[in-house]
Image (cartoon, helix red, strand yellow):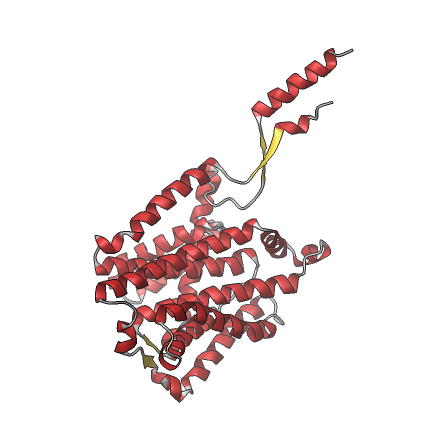
Length: 356
């Protein structure tokens, strides 16, 4: 006897995600070709957008999916930046090869940091991560070999060793920025589609319930915290490779590397992959429009974030997805009615009834 449930199927992709993938590939191809027809200012702007997008995706992975609201991710960005300078200057590593090594260094520092801050819960966890970041900043300011409080610069010989010619050096850094941004999106997407993504979602919704279902809450959160630190460290290395100079105040700046990122995620839509993409566009548009208004720029950003949290906590992308049922990065399984399969099942059932 045929089963009527065969008329349904489990679907992960959507029509929007398939069209979106084609548009994304085309857009990425255009961006990759930019050094051959665009200007240097355009390349710098896109690199900045790329590393803010990567930071937003990684923070969203922590807060939006694991429920870890960290206000201290600038700790790993600064660590990654300093690690780049140490590897390039003192160890003789090629600056581009030092970027993943900087991520590994940040991940190693994240292990003892996690065992400290994970003793805290809720608002205390957020404050604890910020305090740890301040401790790192003050500690690096005392190390004279790293320039102390005034910081250090990347020697010209090392910069010239990135590639032959200024155009190829800037292009190499530009392509590295694109790769890190695309890699961050791919990492979050693939992670959330795996069983680890289900565990993260369960922990975010209810730690007690997820634990009762067999999820190892502590191990899962430690793992995702280290992964986020690794990615943030790589972004930090990229940031200060573009700036060619680092100092404790610049590397561990809570406004630049955490407050702005939180704004991007909140305004775009926390708990979605599309949200940070929308948020980073809004952030840069507002920054350009309000660049001449001084401190009012930060006031407007803060007011917009508060208004969004009060009126539409799901963010701009959440409103769009709810209104038009769009999912460009579907990570959930959906049960979909299949008319063709239903017709086949109905015919099979009718044929079974006719048999003696």
